[in-house]
Length: 356
Image 1 (cartoon, one colour):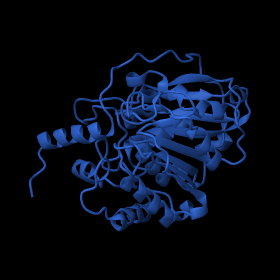
Image 2 (cartoon, rainbow, N blue to C red):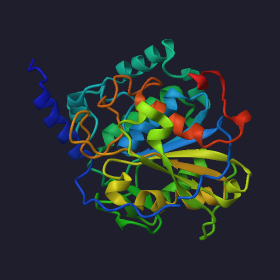
Image 3 (cartoon, rainbow, N blue to C red):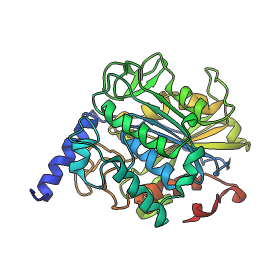
């Protein structure tokens, strides 16, 4: 077998990232509210997460790591948990735009069981009642259908099927579908938000969160910036300086609110697409009328080790060998970002292992 040299790993990393998203021009991030984040009372025992592409992989990883308090997950164009198995060559060969050989789902699930035994993820029994919303467009050639299908099969091993929604028959490309924002729905191009006459954010949140109401067209809240490096320290070294939070007016005024974490895809970080991902997916509109604070953590590109030239989330191990469990730097960093938002001491702790 050919040895994996640093040069080869560098080239393979570039290849797998290119399979997920093309390079795009860099735009300056539009201004967000720079005033102090308001005092917030957030229910940290019933958090939901979602993501697109690499963000979808991260959403699954984050949920499994903390399924004792992350109660729902939405994944657009993602594959099974631990698909890359910590190896860029495997990620390239099996987890994006092709599947060379059979993906051993049993082996991936055994890794999850191993992490559970070691206390590196929450008990898999939590997954039984979790809410899961999965989406794959029929025109998506960046993450192909067999990869997405395996994520569905994997969740069926853990979660009651009545709690899983899998939408996989709509003619849409590799992007976040919206009702009327973004690019041509049939094209996988920046900012990877599609004008598809389909409200993915609404469909997803309606499945993940009980008793949500359809929003009106106005927004009461603001997007605030947070200092990711200051909050999460060394765990945030592969993240951007700034992250963003959408805070509805009701939450800013002290009403108890839920939390949702939205992980962008490759080439969707703020330095690449400005405020497109934080303002155009439709999540803020639904959050605004349903007392949900939305955290938008941000990665950054890196042309040096750890190599991440298109600002993807870590789902193959570029940032940490423990990238898919609680000990992973990015997972721990995002947890710290979320907890930093909450001003209510009584809600700053969740069930047991939330304090790892």
